[in-house]
Length: 59
Image (cartoon, rainbow, N blue to C red; front, side):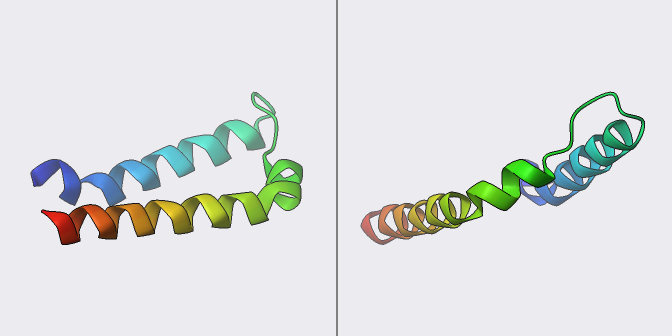
C-alpha cells in the first residue's frame, strides 16, 4: 500500500523532469502528439478504469 501512496509523488517528479528537459530542448515536446491522439488516450484510460472495477467486483 505504501508504494501506491507514493504514486502521486513519482508522477509529479516525472512530469517535472519531462518539462525541464523539454524546455532545454533535450527531448522533443509531446504537445503535437497529444493534440492528435487525445481521444485514444481517453479510451485507454476509460477501459483501464472499467477493467480495474471489474477485477475489484470479482475479488
